[in-house]
Image (tube, rainbow, N blue to C red):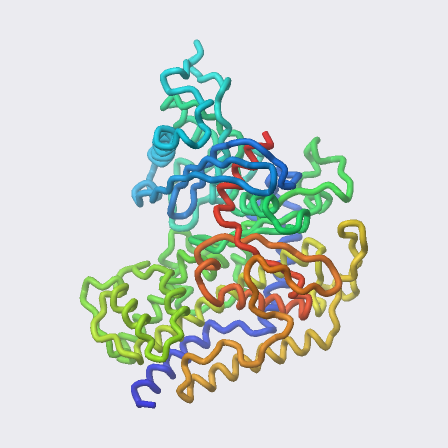
Length: 556
């Protein structure tokens, strides 16, 4: 092993250590997140937001509905035909939202853009069972100047930004994230802003449902889940990150003053939008590095969405860029870059590079070297360079996944579906019995399973570092496998232990394309639940937020 390889590798490892989250960290994070969730259910705020969805689909829903899915990067217009047999047909168009619309003083340019894309979709996709919608020149305004809703097509609107939901079809935008900033829209109803733009074009569309991306994904997963009634939550790992889950209405005490929610029984449910990106914005337990601090200071919303800034795809590439710049400036990398390199631009590295580097298991790292050269406009990228950058990228994505696993574990605990192997809260010192699908199930794990999980996690970290120091940079990520947490396909039903399967629908490019993201999540879940992790089934809910919005529109 050459001196250059040793120097670059050692320095990369030193910087990667800052991103480590060990077993004890996961325990502490999970416990803190549970406390946050419980407190937020009692008061109005930016997290634990009731969606007003009180029943999830059972797969028998039918009809054709429109949906608009506005995410952190793209706008999708879709027609979804629900077949009533747990399947659906989707036709969609996808459009990049121009940067000047994402950051703008006024809301009309953005919503006008969306309405125009809906108009284009209606014209371009007559085959999408839209023939019952009247043509534009057949849609006659009333004397009051408003379009009548006869023959209007219902549209569900997935809006992936934090809103205070007031009903299924109404909400108030609280704040922007993911780098967006449109001040005039704050305090306004996204459905009303979209309906205004639609009416300006006299389109025969009625916006009937406001869906958060995570709530929509939960609805879609429940509709298509291999086991009906077992879906507990959904999670998004794309440009942003968020989750939704099924909560007991009796626990959502901030709604109990409303007439519709004063009388409730233990079996009454509410789908809750966690908005977990803002969990621990006070930084009581979240890990931080100098790179996190630099990224946050330069962001559109300093001091906010601190968990999201450590998990979501919008930020992971920037974290990697900040580390690589340091390595390059300190002389640990052989490659050279020009003054026009994306490496010198804030947010110049797309987070997809983390998945690409992780997939390259070759001895020569040829694909990694080629992609680094292309993405960074770098010359002379050596094996040593690629190895060092790959090391840092792996640490950043591993931390993101373990943070995600900690948050997912908190949701599972709060739902009552499973308790931690070791009590994380004062009221969890005893096994908890809950009734699920007509039978009781004890939700506790042996202390020895917890201790073994902790020991295994620490040994894996130590061995990984030692092998890389001694010249085995591409060694497997887990040397002491956890038999309770083995790689599985995203649709494979896990080998269950005592208790029901806990089904989780996921969506987003990070979990879909990064080869070890789910496994790293599972290792964090095992740190909390021991062998109980095997009860968790994680399944990809592709296009979930769009399909979910259609399902919500169908319920109106």
